[in-house]
Length: 191
Image (cartoon, rainbow, N blue to C red; front, top):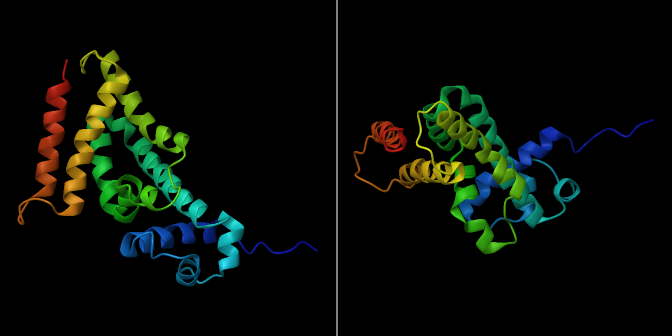
C-alpha cells in the first residue's frame, strides 16, 4: 500500500506565501521555521522535508516570486511594451510582500538568499523579447537590447517602488503618474 502524500504542492505553495508575508511583516531575522509552520498549519518537519532549511525556504520564496512575475509578464506580452509595463505595476500591487522580498535586498543581507540566476533571467525574458520585436518593427531605437530592457525596467521599477513605499506627495495619484511614466518611456525610446 502506497503511503499518502502529506507534503504536496498545495502545502508547498502555502508555505511560500506564508513565509513571504511573515518576512515582509517581521523581517527575515525574526522569522523562524516554527512560526512559518504554525502559520501554514503544518509541522516544521514538513518545512524541512519540502525545503531543507530556512535559507532554502527563503530562496524558494524569491524564486517563486520571480516565476509568478514572469508568468504575469508572459500573459501581458501580446500588449507589447506598454502591456508589460502595466502588468508590472499590477503584479507588484497584488504581490507587495513578494515584490519587496525580490527587490528589497533584505534577505540577502540576512542569509545566503539570492534568486536563482535562471529565475531572475527568465523573468526578464518577456521584456527582452518585446524590445527585440519593437526594434524589428522599427518603433524602438536601435541599441543593445539588454541595455534598452534594463533601462526600461529600471524606470518602471523605480516608480512602482516609490508607490509601494508611499514616498511622494500624500495625495499622489500613482496610477496617473505611472501612466505618464509609461508614455514618457515610450517617447524616450521611440525610433
